[in-house]
Length: 319
Ligand SMILES: C[S@@+](CC[C@H](N)C(=O)[O-])C[C@H]1O[C@@H](n2cnc3c(N)ncnc32)[C@H](O)[C@@H]1O
Ligand SMILES: [Zn+2]
Image (tube, rainbow, N blue to C red):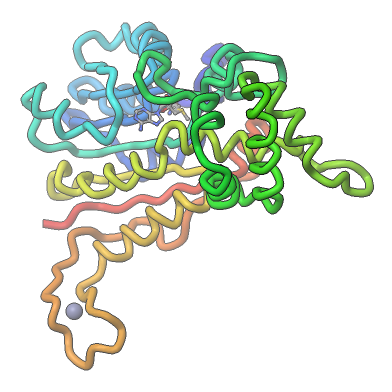
C-alpha cells in the first residue's frame, strides 16, 4: 500500500512505515496532520483509517494547501484542510467543532517543494529574492528584512544558535558592513557574502559554506522553534485517552525540545533534583512509545537523502 509505483510524493514523505506503525490509524479515528505539505503522510493516514477515519490537515503555505487538496480529493469530506500554523490547532479544531483527536502528526521543517521553488528564496542554487517565509502572504518580515533590520549581535546569535555556524560573528560583521552601502536582498548575494567571509579549508568545503546560515535564517524567519514549543504545550490536551503524538524533527534543537517535553510529561515527579521528598504531585500525562529517537532505515536513506537527519518520537496520552 505504501510503495505504489507512480505515487512520487509518497517517496518524499519521511519514515512512512514508522509513522503508520506509531500512529496506528484506525477506522473511525480523527487525526490531525499539522504539516500537510504534499499530503503524503495524510494520504497514508486516510488509507489506513478507511473507511471512516477523518483527517484535519493544516499548512501555513497556501501552495502546499492547494497541492494537498488535489492529492486528498479522492477522500472527499473525510479530509478537512485549513491554512493555519499548527500552533493555532486548538482554534481551528474549536471552529470545526472537534473536541478530541486520536492522533497528531507533525513532520517539521520545509518541504522539498518549497526548497525547489527558487523564487521562495530558501535555496541558493539560483538567484532569487531572500523571502523564506513558508507563508509568503503573511505580514511577517522576510529573510531580507531581518538582514537589514537586526543588529550585528542578533544576526550572529541566529547563525550560531540555529545554524551552529562557527564563523557567525564574522559573517554578521560582513552583512552589517555591506548593508551600509547595499542591502543584502537575494540568495546569491548572501551565499557569496558568506562564502567570502569564511576561510577556505584545504580540500574545499564539504557542504556549501552558506548552508548553515540559510538554515538558521529560515528557522528564525518562520519562528520554527516557537511554533514547535506552542504545539507541544497544547498537543496532549487535544488528544483523547490513548491518542498518539508523533513528531519528526530534522534539527537537534527541535529534537531536544521534543525529548525534554516528553520526558517531563511522562514523569511522575518533576521536583528539582535535590529535593529529598517529592512535593510536586505531578501525574504523568503520557507514556513514551519511543525510548530513543527513531532514525530512518538505511533503505530509505539510500532513496531519500533528506531522511538521513530525521528523528521520530512518539508518545501516547494517558487517562
Ligand atoms: C516536511 S513538509 C511536510 C511533508 C508532508 N508530511 C508530506 O508527507 O508530504 C513540512 C510542511 O509543513 C509546513 N509547516 C512547517 N511549519 C509549519 C507550521 N508551524 N504550521 C503549519 N505548517 C507548517 C510547511 O509549509 C511544509 O509544507
Ligand atoms: Zn515531585
